[in-house]
Length: 257
Image (cartoon, rainbow, N blue to C red; front, side, top):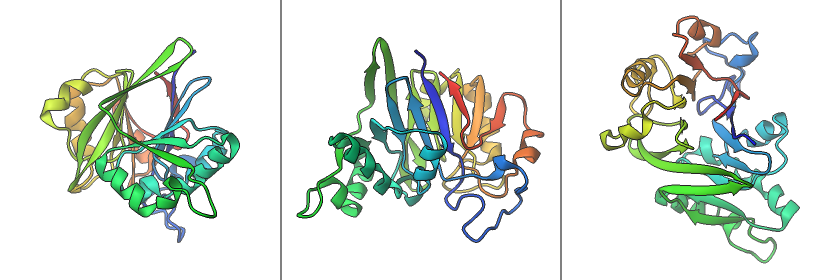
């Protein structure tokens, strides 16, 4: 049994195209330029761990034929990572068991205040989710296979987001502007680095392409995959400019870790 990582969505907060049909610099004839908002999936034969519930999560799960979710991990309390949370209700309806949701303190506070009905019984509807504290390390088992999740705080502009490192092989940081120096060793020599690359110009809350080049030269992952890309970034244009060890993501891209 192997562990698979799937990038369900790799678009920035408005997606591509935007709701008004605007593609920016992206060629609409290339399907890889159609980007839904960021979510990801860690899966084995019997276990599905979802990272974030983007507003497009229903489309993403249907497209990838994902019929069950066992656990949800959140990165940070922004709408483009959270506001598909209502779609999780179906998994409670199927199992009758509250779906465990893991989040850091600031995200937990946002979830409980903004989506209280998901976590607290009412006269009309039962709670469908169960909030869990995010630890530095989580271990889950599928048969003899273990999935190790390491939660690393990273800077995302004025707040902290969470980067997840899976089995010490793959790091996923969809919204990030800085890795703290004390944590750099966790990121060295990874097999895969899936990381925020919002645009070409600098941004106070996100990495841009120049930031990625600098980071890759320091931590030296074998493969770097760019996500959270806005409509400045055309897939074909970028892939033709990048070295072979760096590539733009596309919705549905998956690999084994």
